[in-house]
Length: 424
Image (cartoon, rainbow, N blue to C red):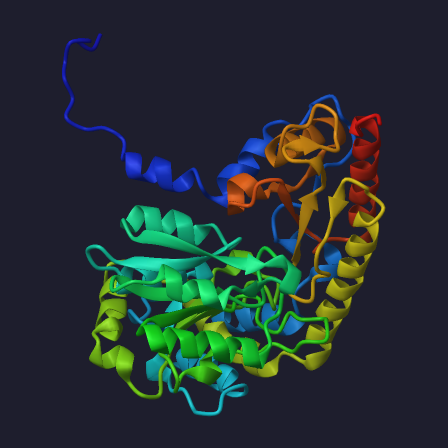
């Protein structure tokens, strides 16, 4: 028997606990934990943006064959270089160059384990004592989690729902000070489903240049647009302001489990090299893990040979689902959607109120309470945006699923509303 009086010198890392508390995964785990075991209906997963489980979102056969070919070649069984396999970096540069006014080279590309590691690399590379970063509200919460872990201070600028979730550019200058190092722009938007115009992104780039800060452009949903606005990469403005562009094959090819992403220095003026950011990026990658080498080996075939009809099919499927979601939500009186989604896989919904702090729903105190009771009573999972995105009494729904599952989920949400609506 161990002596209970023995004093051990180790304990858990509390920084990890505080950082993970503000993650979407942590919030979803909380909601999922409230599912009723008595409900025999299938759970409708409208919380997480991973449509790979649905047959209508299966990846291209080109991508699958590329993986098989890479494995059978026996060329990718060893360790990869720190910055990634050269052929993969060249292919990523060529893929991104289709949309840019200048040419990237393999030296501008750093292969990462999905876009999440690209975020880790970017935040670590720009961090210094006392530094702060400007993050969108609402935005992807992994930035919050990682910044907390890095002791990187966070300042929030609002996205404006009445203006299609555009950046409140005027607020950026008021937020920034001499310790501000970067601003994060997520386009197409998670969690809002927004797609920014060329002129709006140029305004953001010019504001960042005026402040002397770089732009971290999260473009993991790049080209997943189905409204009137086309996707415009932030790297187009790399001659105005240095840009760290983040992306992956996770969303456009619907393979988030393959964990292959990239960080790109979109900086034709070489400012990131002169400032030491490039050296810091390499330094971080020297002490972190690499994406699987055989996945990297498959990248040239995936990026170069995937046919346009595959991408078109994904876009058509997403648009149909987005339309269905938007129309279905309009049949739920307690919810409103300020902007029809035009990109990514998500939409933000507001819980309408009769007056300040009084919900239209009986016995529903806030967005978390809404999601917890919805999970328990209807086996539908959605994300409470108050806890996950700092937007109290807002919800995030993903429409990237089978139409039949989405329709079932919307019916259950409507039934939940009818059960809880406050009697007038």
